[in-house]
Image 1 (tube, rainbow, N blue to C red):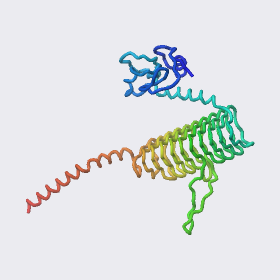
Image 2 (spheres, helix red, strand yellow):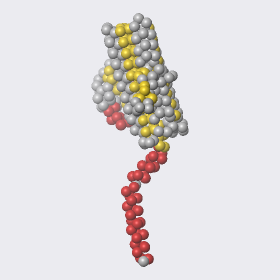
Image 3 (cartoon, rainbow, N blue to C red):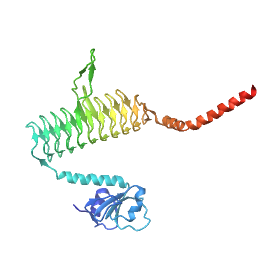
Image 4 (cartoon, rainbow, N blue to C red):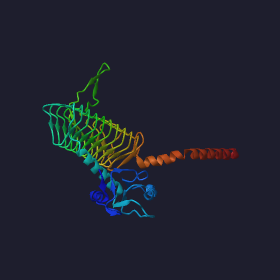
Amino acid sequence: MQFSAAQIAQLINGKIEGDPNASVGSFGKIEEAVKGQLAFLANPKYEEHLYTTGASIIIVNESQELKQPVNATLLRVPDAYTAFASLLAAYQEIEAQQLTGIQEPAYISKTAQIGDKAFIGAFAYLSDGVVIGNQVKIHPQVYLGKNVKIGDNTVLHPGVKIYHNCVIGANVTIHAGSVIGGDGFGFAPQADGTFKKVPQIGNVVVEDYVEIGVNSAIDRATIGSTIIRKGAKLDNLIQIAHNVEVGHYTVIAAQAGVSGSTKIGNGAMIGGQAGIVGHLQIADGARINAQSGVTKSIKTKGGAVTGSPAYDYTSALRSQVVSRNLPEMEKRLKELEEQIKQLLAEKV
């Protein structure tokens, strides 16, 4: 598909600087783009490529000053990165709209309900009582257990497994290999040293506009629901344990793990490989640094922690400064000891 600068400008509310009839059919990085491709410039480090790129159309910030002539047609917007993201989303939506129907072979229970313009990929399995909303995209080898509900415009990528009774909202994206609703890690210690499994009879609720990365696991609740609130974004390889609640618009980076019954507030940011123990309260807007081990609740809104065990971020930085100065401090201490010895010797 070909799009003109005028059409793209209308989509992103951009101001055209150059030929409005310039057209593109694909995207390219500004340093590598060729004729017929669209690029964007948001990072000043790449400004030099603005004057040498082969791209036909470039999205730039309104504030971008030109130091020399540019061959491409420019589309000026308040925020080039956000505009480019919006354009990619629109392009992706156009492509997704072309994907409809049911591929064979796929198993669909007679009691399953499928909305308008849905897509069911080959080897997908839809159990009894499944309800699929409008324009849902279910890619090959997806498994949906009994009574699973999927909201409108949600996309389940290949190999996603959603266990029985789980509820997925609208406009959700779950990437390949993720498992939603597996058993929580619940075992009761016995007198003879063995462990008795505690049945996990709850479910998982994923609210609207959530994105879950590749090979992540969100466990079902023991009783009640494990909840991922609206707009939360989870990276790849994340573990969310039973009865956890992740707040609205919270972001969690790859390989992080959250233990059972911990409640994470709204707008929190959790770095990669961070670990949070169970039954904690994490305040709204909290910042947890990568590889931190959080063992206590974060009660201050917007509080930041780092380290393992994690503690106040500012105090941690001060400690790091002191730590780096230890060799010099040791040297000075030894010099002082020598001076004291000399003074004592002189008195004797």
